[in-house]
Amino acid sequence: MAQFVDDRKSATIERRAKLFRGFADPSRLAILGALCNEPLAVHELVERTKLSQPNVSNHLRCLLECGLVASDRHGRFIRYRISSPRITVLLSDVDALLDVVAVGVEACDNYREA
Amino acid sequence: MAQFVDDRKSATIERRAKLFRGFADPSRLAILGALCNEPLAVHELVERTKLSQPNVSNHLRCLLECGLVASDRHGRFIRYRISSPRITVLLSDVDALLDVVAVGVEACDNYREA
DNA sequence: ACAACATATCAGCGAGGAGTGATATGGCGC
DNA sequence: GCGCCATATCACTCCTCGCTGATATGTTGT
Image (tube, rainbow over the protein chains, first blue to last red):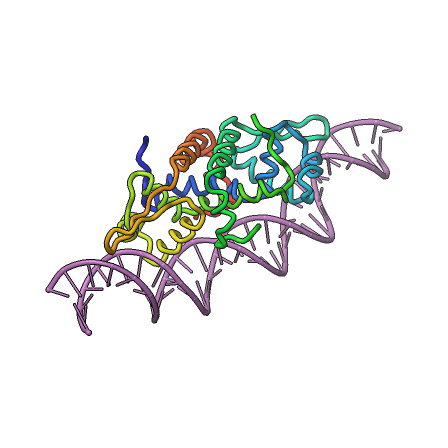
């Protein structure tokens, strides 16, 4: 197992933190989760996530820039999809971890209930 | 592969987001990373992460409440350790994902450089 | 009991980011 | 070309969270 760096200013750590923040929002998680099942156009994402259209677009731009999703134009629709299966793996890992720590996480009030 | 829920208000998604937020901070990542290598007392974490002592304590309380770390008193020291190997797995998977998307994540300016 | 060290707690400040609403751009069919 | 639909952009507000500084609690040796 690779040793982890511990200096908070390390570039490695900052990259990790930045990536985690990409996932640390219910709206983006909803979008990513939906895209893990199947590629979808924006208006479909709006329907399923019940977010406003500008909101979805904003998040998609961010996810696109970060390389977490990719997009193809199909007529006047733009279809978004997960860029790598590793994302699905990551989400599954979180669920696995939640099996162990879910109670504690619920209880922790350092973060509000979203 | 399990289907992911897509409604942003789902309890599942909110739990995931909350857990991700636990990891979405350089300071906590530094602490967790250090603890992945070996159990450590607070003052040792302070040395390695170069964070202030109250700051480390605050993060540790959060991580403890969330069940991500555990603690044992040894004399006047309190030794903290990772609560589950799944955490190490999660961190490794993030690094794996970063191998693919690191460039994009660096470039994305929706989040500042921490 | 007192001094010294280890850790925890808390209030207050400051900054980053999520959501909204209005608006702009772009492609399609008639 | 003109509406219409799909998507993107932007300014603004509110709220949340991380850090600091001062202080409290706790433990060990002498």
